[in-house]
Image (cartoon, rainbow, N blue to C red; front, side):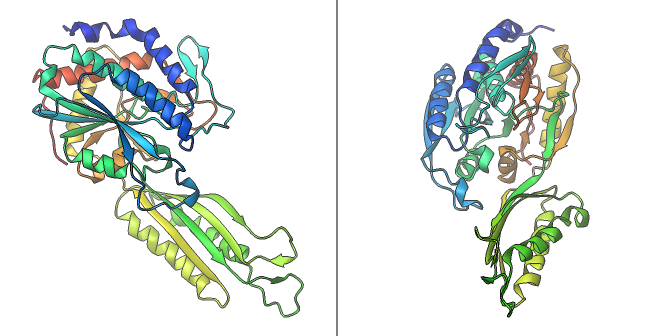
Amino acid sequence: MNLPPSIAKLPGSAGELSMLLAGWCDQNSGSGNAEGLTAMLGLLQQEFSRLPGEVASVPLKPGSAFPFPLRKPRDPLAALRVRVRPQAPIQLLFSGHYDTVYGSDDPFQHCELLAPEKLRGPGVIDMKGGLVVMHAALEAFERTPHAARIGYEVLLTPDEETGSFHSARLLKEAAARHHFGLVFEPARPNGDLVKSRKGTANFTVTSHGRAAHAASPARDGRNAIAALAEFLTGAARLPEELPGVLLNIGNIRGGAEATNVVPDFAEAQLDVRITHAADRDAVLIRLNELAAAITNREGHRLEIAGGFNRPPMESSPAAEAIFAHWQHCARDLGLAPFSWVHAGGGSDANLLSAAGLSCLDGLGPCGDRLHTPEEWVYLPSLVERAQIAALFLHRVAATEADLPTGP
């Protein structure tokens, strides 16, 4: 097989890509660290400006719904957008995010080489490694002979880890002007891509009772914590009642400093995930039934706020066809075979697919332990995944591979 020279030479840039990744990950860009996000945006602008086209920092307007008020960012956020050849006959969207789950006060701040092929660090796999792969693939593709036939937009957002509430509008607008989306979230540890994803929801459940002295003979207190515990016990059974649904009770607070007071307030935060869009209504109905059973009692009131922020991402015929081409590129490069799987975690591919844009997800490097202090990336996969993406783009541009579009 004759590879374009720029794609054939990608393995020679392995050290450079590893150094770039380490530098990006040593810059903290936790979702709540406005200063760090701004610094990271500057680093990305510096690299992505090497591509042709317009590079812009796009301020994001506040989203309309925040299930968790504490997650509202305190400072303005901005996305990075690069638009190349918007008049070309084929238009692709390259999606990624540059925020991580590690705040500025997290002890996990710097990269460490665990072995010649294994780098541990904050965001190495989720998803600064994917941004390195995306950038390397586009640079190589730009030096191929038919690149002018493909136009594309790179959209990198700063709030994916907290629900994409600010960037959802921008993603929806971008989905409308492209034929297909390529999302560089991490591949599975064995190299598999992502075929579909669960939809995600966040809820805050607030229990109101009536305060009283714990030893009151009248027993006129109404314990908000006990009522909330009853609700949560029922909610925890939802995965048994509704196959394909996941529910996690992630945070609880309530009561007063003194334990001899019947608490009149308690609150819990829930993370809910669904496999199919039809599961949404079933979850909402069941949660409201559980709340109503408590609210109907004298002196108690249970309130549920929040909702679904990411619909499920389900596979499409267009994605099936693109995946086959992606596999074929990997085989021709002599790389290990891979398949694709359903993933429990959400990504911006959920929002793009809900807006009508078919996507291929999990195109980033291989690694594991994301969202933990043991997050690591398999360094050779940076080059491997960049070569696959660049070869795919070259074949589409050279009309050696069809690009199916539509849902």
